Image 1 (cartoon, helix red, strand yellow):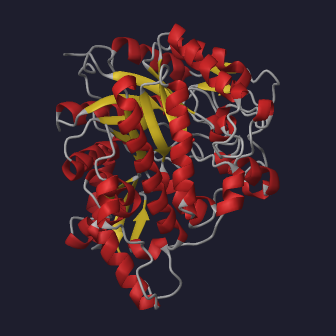
Image 2 (cartoon, rainbow, N blue to C red; image 1 turned 90 degrees about the vertical axis):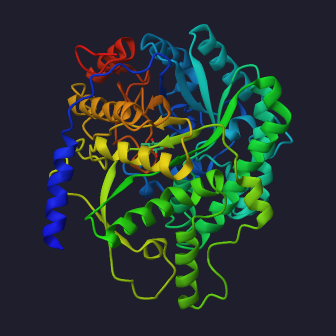
Image 3 (tube, rainbow, N blue to C red; image 1 turned 180 degrees about the horizontal axis):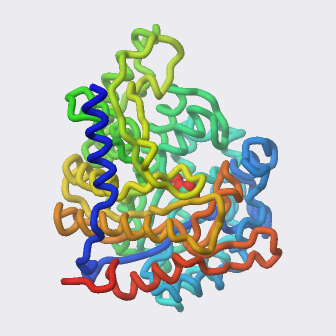
Length: 494
Ligand code: BGC
């Protein structure tokens, strides 16, 4: 077994040095950059904005944030959005992905009072983008639940929030139907549910491992589906836009070619991504997740599975609620099957029953959780095509963090070059219908629990300067040139 793993490691490492693809990106391929309201806007309580679970978390549990910082000011994009749009324009991008803060539009989360100042902010931002000929790609929920909905209902553990989200989504479709055509309902439900209502490592910090996160998963899928149906029934004909939910996963490469390790890889990807992707693209939870959670629940003494049932009606309601497949992806692990863990407290990790690891020689950004493994993205894209059919895929996030903030960010350039090359391989060699690549991110931001200690921007933001000055890193020029030439090397072929 050890020998096999060693051989696989060497094989994998050599794949990391795959030559850069020398083909041009297809003529209609689109590029963009992404960010999210909490991470850049600031103005946390300005002009009537309500408190979110992340405002509350950072204000009340500073020890949960690496540098005890808050998103109160962040990049101050609430005031400096024109500067941000100018940077996007200068990079020659097609899309600017941003999120609307629910509590800037509806300060309490409820639909009774629309905050006109918040509406104006986004209207102005969309007008600025229009002027710059950049298309907005708009996420309705990037983790920032209005705090009252957590206090009143327990947030995503309560079905009431499904309806409240759909009402908020409807208000946004109505308000911004002349401005936005590319919609995203929810960003990365896995992080919302697993970190927020499972391990409790992120806001709102509910610890309910292996129980709450599955309840959250069901509610968040229903919320997405309801918003999709509202759009479909009432807005699609006029708006002529498209809507999807962003799903995400790390890629988990089998640690050997044994059947057990192949199954371990499939199983963990189904738990991480399939939990959300399968109901939307194929209908119902993935069978392996249904089986595993039912088995462990029974042995733990539960009367029914910890994974809530999706009724036939709910399965039909959720299935097909996509106009494209939106994917966030950052990195890769190797994975092996492991002996069945002892029965104890419910736990998402033991439900998955795998061990994930990384060969020590995989490169990464300095101090980063992201190993640079471009072939992992290619394998994931091929898996998506195989599992969900040849859907149009839009990469909505991909990028490299470091903890130095250096302007000479050569690692970030090699990350982008490698991952974009993997995209070209997937398009030209594997026939994956990938049409768009959106990088995370254009400017540094407030990185949730990492605060201002982890940097992913192609522009540095000086967070100690009241002006929050933006300074280009080396990667900004590289990316701009890549978008212009549609080529990753000096000379490309058609
Ligand atoms: C999130 C972003 C975050 C990025 C990098 C993604 O999971 O959607 O909000 O900034 O990871 O950490």
